[in-house]
Length: 291
Image 1: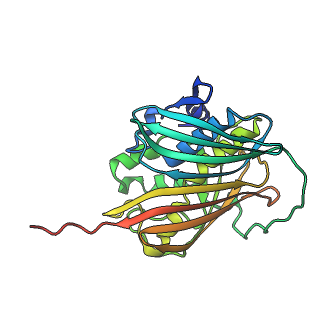
Image 2: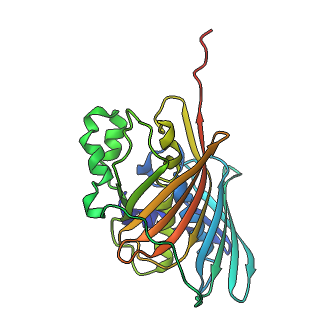
Image 3: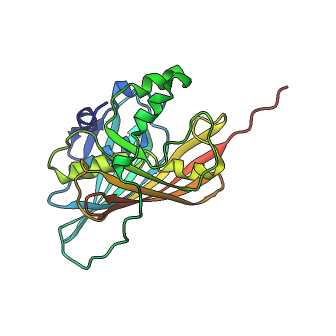
């Protein structure tokens, strides 16, 4: 799925004033819907009920696995329209049950005090190998379904500093990772769509940060992973067709959960454009004893 196909997929059908329907692309072939897709579609549903304001934060919970084979119904609650801020709540429903909910706040454009943390040191994106190309070099050693997956076009270009983890033989690593990423194809001039695609991409590698110090990954036998919640703050507008550095850290893992935080910096000027936080399930199921 390329970027243009992704943008078409994320578009919603308006059923009523505050009711929308979204779908999942057939070519995804996932067991469950990718979390970033539901975040992006919910944000688009909220935007469809807001005028002349820009999202500055969102907070969401993943409640049930999404079924990629049926549409998602998005219901928007117009919580508040204030003088400077607008608040929306979005509930995503499948099979008569909530699978996801999101709260988002929008603000009129406003000047104010400014400061930011400096962008962390990282190799230039041109010096980092493309994740997909690196994986294709080892494709002959991967399962057939993964080789097929790697051949498909991707909407987001990603380059992980130090390389992606070895799916077959994960090793113990520091709970820190840096990823250069951007939309592969032009998104257009709508700043809201750049936010939406950035939100879609923000869920792609964050949870894996908390797995690194434990020498496991999502293909480790018995490993169960899933995003539980996701929060995002948009500090400054940005063009996601440009390269951005996603600096991620996992300060804590406990109780079968991993906590991850990330900052997204624009490569061209080092501007901090967004921050993320996410807690994810990271449960290693022990094999059942033979009878």
